[in-house]
Amino acid sequence: MKLIISMDDTDNLETQGTGWLMEDACREMAALEWGRFSMISRHQLLVHPDIPYTSHSSAMVFEAETTVNQKNFVAFLSRYLTQHSAPGSDPGLCIVPELQPDAKDALISFGLRAKKEVLTKDEAYALARDTGAHLSEHGGTGGGVIGALAGIGLRLWGNDGRYRGWFHFGKSGEIMTAAELSKHEAVEDIRTPDGEVVAEEALIALSDQLKTISMNGKSTLLVQPVNSDHVHTVIAKQELKNF
Image (tube, rainbow, N blue to C red):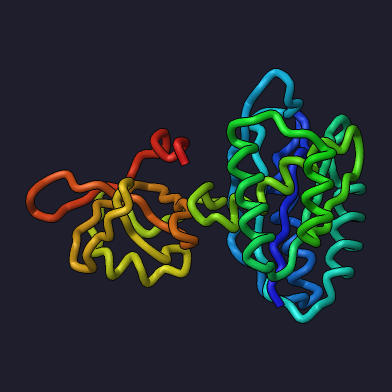
C-alpha cells in the first residue's frame, strides 16, 4: 500500500523547519519497520498578507510504501505533531491512500490554486471529505491543514517542488557523464529546465552541492549546456527557487 503524507506550519522563526520534523518522524517510523519512505519534497505556496506563515509558506510531503494500516500513521503522526510542533505554530496533517482519477484531479487542482489564491480551512475540509483524505489540525489555528492538503495535490501533480537535501557526488568542476550521475538513487532523471532529456553521454560539470526537483513525477537534476562539446553545468541554487 502507498500513502502520501504531508505536513505544514509546524515551526516558528526560532525553530527548525517542517522538513526537519518530518525527517525525524520518518526515522522513528523506519525504526519501527513501518515500511520504506521516499525523499521529502518541499512545495512553495502563495505568500500573501492574509496567509499566516513563519518564513516560507511551504508544505513538506513524502510517500510511504507500507503494510501498516493508515490508522497507525494517523495516530503516530498526530501525536508527533502535537508533541514536537513549535509554540505558536498552526500544524496540519494530511494522509491519502491510492486515489481514483477524479479525486486525484481535484487534489491537484487545489494544490495549484494554493500557489495563486488565498484558500480557506472550510474548502480544505470539504475537499478532504470528498476525496477520502485524512486531514487534521494539531495546534494553534490549525491553518496548516490548507497547506498540507495543497502539498498532497502538488506532489501528485509531479511537476512542482524541490527535494529535501543536498547531494555530493564529486568535487566542484569534476566532470561526470549523465549516465554516471543517473546511477545515484536520488537522480531519477536529468533534463534541461525546459524539459529536454539529456543524453547519457552528455558531460556534466558538478558543483559542490546538487539538488533535485520534481519533474514528471521523478527526482530530476536540472542542467544546461554551456558549449558545443556537450558539456553541461548544474542549474544554480538561486535558479532552483523557481521550482
